[in-house]
Length: 171
Image 1: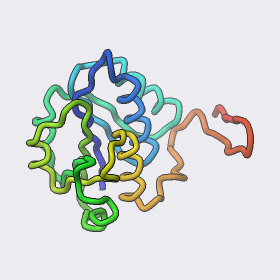
Image 2: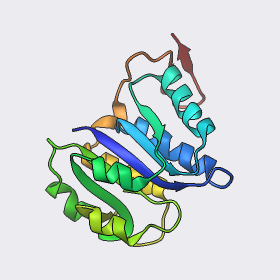
Image 3: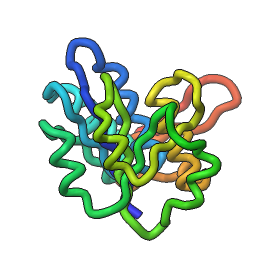
Image 4: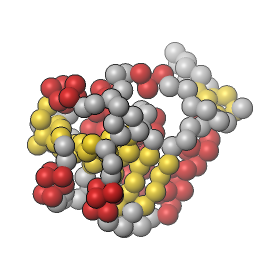
C-alpha cells in the first residue's frame, strides 16, 4: 500500500512550522509522500527534502495548486481525518491493505466537498486536536505499529537510543 498525505490550505506566513511537522510525522511513520496545497512555499518543500537527504528513505514532498486535481486523479481510496469523523478504532479495519491510500488533513476550513469525496471520514478523537496528532495516530494504526522502528535506507545520520542524553551517528 502506498500512502500519500494531502495537506490542505498551507499558509506560508502562518503555517510553516505546522506544515513542516506534518511532513516530518508522515515521513517518520511510514507514508510515502506529502502533497501541500494552498500557498506555494518552496522553503517548506526544501526543508522536508533536506530531512530525507540526512535521515534516509524515499519520501517525497511536493506542491499542487488545487486539492481537487489531486483527488480527481487519485487511483485508490481516500481517508479524510477530521474530528467529526467515525472513530479510528472502529473504521481502520475496513481499510484495505492492498490499495493505495490518500489521507487528507485540513489546515484552514475544509470544504464540504472533501467530506463527500472521502471513502472514510475518520476521527482520532471527537475533541479539538491538531492535524499532526491525527496523522500520527492514524498512521500508527494503519501500519499496525510496525513503522515505529523502521530503518530508512541511504541515511547519513542515525539516532542511537539513549536512556539519557543524545547520540547521533554520522555515516
